[in-house]
Length: 156
Image 1 (cartoon, helix red, strand yellow):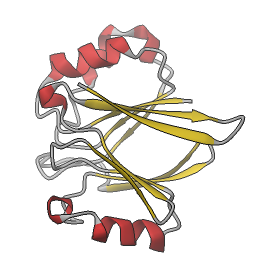
Image 2 (image 1 turned 120 degrees about the horizontal axis):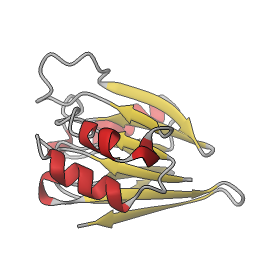
Image 3 (image 1 turned 180 degrees about the vertical axis):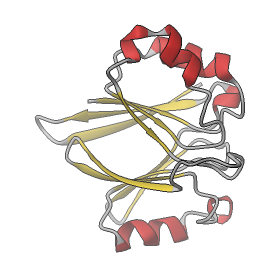
């Protein structure tokens, strides 16, 4: 399973489209907020994405959004905690978001907000921030469902 992870596109619809066009083989596309509508160009122009699963959460700049702030999803045998991260204070560190992941029995946390690419594993929890699409940064997660391995990659 290939998961394309985007965040903080802040109106950079063309950059989002270009990234999506490079990863039409993705099974799931996740947008972590602050530009929730920026994937719409890709959806219109890339027929390959018509049947993909999309997960979106709202960021602090997505004013008036009807999207949830948090999504708990099971993907490829992993329990995901998906959020923008501003309510968890990720600009000051990952201790709060890690605590929430542990409390909710999650083993993968995806967050944005800092505009900084980040990956670390703590207490069996993978913490991953793809960076900012605004700077052509994004992430890809590969889950091998046969052997249960997971791999996190940053791109820019």
